[in-house]
Each structure stands twice: as C-alpha cells, then as structure tokens.
Image (cartoon, rainbow, N blue to C red; front, side, top):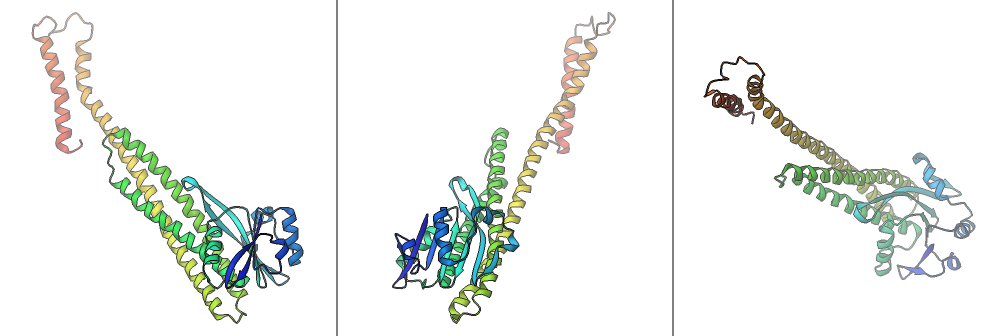
Length: 323
C-alpha cells in the first residue's frame, strides 16, 4: 500500500491516487509495497529502493549512503502490540531533493499520529526535509513515551519485589514467577529501544551532514536538537537497563532467600527429630534382655526421653536465633 501526501496551505493532505500525483507528492509512504508500487517509485526517482530482504540483511554500517544525490537512511524502529509484544523492523527513509519516501513493513505508531497531526496543524511540513525531521521528532517522542512507561512499570515491579504482600510461600513463589516474566518483557522492550536509538543516532549524524548545506537554519537547528534528544534518550535507556538488571538480580536473590528458608526449616526439623528417632530405634531392637523392658515406667520414660531430646535442640536453635 502506498500513501501520498501533498502540501496544502502549509499542511499535509493525503491524496487518494499517489501514483497519479507523484510530482506534487512531498511524502510517499510505502507500507508493504507491491512490486508495481516499487517500480513506480523507482521510475519516478531514477534509482532503486531497497527491498524488504535488503533492508533486513543490510549491515548497520551500510544503512546510510548517498546514491545519485539521494540520501538513503535505514533505522530499526519498534512497534508495540498487545501485552507489550515488541516488533523490531527496519524502516528506510529516502530523501530525494524536496521529496521524502519511506519504506516499511510494520506499523510504528508515529506513522499514524504524525500524518494526522500534520493534516490538522500547520507545523511547517512543506518539503521532504521538513517532513522527515517532523517524522523523526514524532518517532523520538514515541520512544520517549515507551521508555517513560517502562520506567514507571519498573517502580511498581520494585515495590512488588521488596514489599511482597503474599503470606503463603506458594503464593510468593507464583508472584516471583510473574515478576520474572514481567522483568523479561521490560528488558526486551528496553533492548529494542536501545537498538533503535543507536540506529537513530547514526541517522541523525548523517542527516546533519545532509542538511548542512541548506539555507534553512531553523531546520538545521531542529536536526541538531533531534540528535541531542536521541543521545539523552540513549543515556536514559541505559539507566533503565541497569535498573532492570538490578531488579532481576534482586528477584533471583529473593527467590534464593525463600529457598534457603525452606531448606533451613527442613534441616532443623531433621536435627530436632533425629534424637527421638535414635531413642525409638534403640527401644525398638528385638533383644530379650533390655533393662527397661519389664519395668512398668519404661514406656513413659522412653516417651519422655524422646520429647526432651526433641525440645532441647529446638530451644537451642531458637536461643541462637537460627529460627
């Protein structure tokens, strides 16, 4: 599917038939393009656009290049689905003079929100360069929103880890399993954000060089600000990743504490009941001559010895603070 946008009164307006208005189109957005749509764009530009396989296989170091005066830029962008399901796929931006062509095979939210905003408000999207910068700003804002949500979720996870409300050990075990899965999802998202920001950092540097010769100083300032915003977000993503690593270690430590407590209880129980078992084993031997065998108080004495031999170790452990 190919969507085209033209400039009408400093605003973007979507056109129904993009191929029939290519000369007036300032932004052509190719979403899962067919071979016919790719051929139409290539004939219009005079250069080939990368296919899906080329976008996925291309090395990060080769995602930024110039061909016939056109600037090709590819970045990995995220798309969040239900239950924070993350999809990371490359998106190619082609800056062809005053035209912008985007090629993608998934649906980042910025590609929905930015055109709608640019149609309602005059935000200066009159050329391919300004549309590209505005779109990248929307993408960075979206990444910031995702990282901010991850940060808030981490605060709640931290509270659940260090202030558990479950009293039963079985309930705490199930909660820890849930927490581990939640931490894993947040780590996947944060890793995806870091990967995306890394590619956007390289793209912003490349874009600064591409727009350095333009007379539009405001656009150059926006590009530089965009680069600084991406760098700040990359630092924040690194901080969030460190917090997630800490929470993962803390969760595993709490699980070890729970397991050690259970093992300690089992070990103490074994030690407490070992002396009574020894006494019962002695008086359970099948010998005819046992001094207490014919004594009327032999059975109560044996029970008393077993109880005392169990109580004394328990009291000792309690006094030492082992229980």
